[in-house]
Image 1: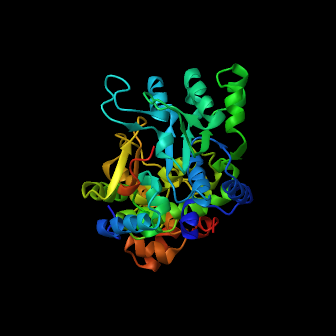
Image 2: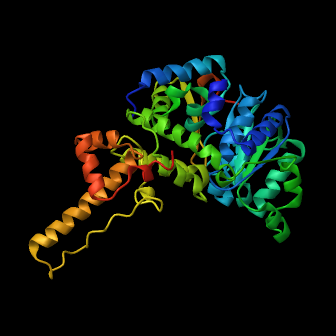
Length: 81
Length: 332
């Protein structure tokens, strides 16, 4: 696991992105690659860990689909459709 | 999404890759379906995300769905969702992937894996953009861009009748062909460096350059698994490398390097003990010196440092074994 970035930094990066794009949603891989700057998104497993932490804090919503992919979105974006 | 994010995800400077990127950028601006084709592991999902994050829909969801991982009986439920009470186990409202992607992009990967029944359901939706969640009283109008991908030969599937021509027309308004890695070998040094940088960052290690001979070998491989296969190969080589340069295992005794005499797997019982020991020692020395030369690309000073020996002493040993450092510099 990376010693370069910490979980709180990644979590802060995710929340900052959602503040600018409150209706965005993607998988952990997409979030790591497209939402976060390179040093924060290097380790997809660490990003997934940060996403789960934010989920436990009630700051995110997730949808696990039948193909086993998990989509994360901001809590306020929930309930569409 | 920034330019840095683009450079981080879409790596390559070859003509074929730049042409693909230019096409991708154009496609991102039109709100039409795109069929992304290319071999396994060549980056179709990366291309799909690039289209989404370069499009006006970038602030909305990107929802990927792997059609190949869906049980056939769940396809409609997964696409359209259901209302509470729609069937016995429907205890609560479940938004399908179309609803999850509302305002954004739905990426249907392995589209060729859809059954005939699932193809009809998807076609119905694509015809007018409306769908009815299971158990819903009225249809819902969707605002979703559809991107689909396949590594299969769809022309053949159409010919065989296993893929509907009318669905193909709907999905294939624009087609993006992602090149195979062997079509752009000149991008391999950049891709390999990127993998090393990411792996070093991930594991808190110091970055190391690839050995020139390994790089040369990487550029000559056919890579049937494309970027994914290259990533695994370089990552493994980087994590297992001990020297100052990353050496891909397959090139340690590469075809261009002088071959050391191999020690017998079992000591010969016909030799006197001291003779057998001397032969084993010589074989070891030769193999080890060749390996040092490969790691240092023929740089005797660097090889001496790696071996913990004085340069002069190592030079004498190389000469005694007939190993010419210049032969290891050929790839530089």
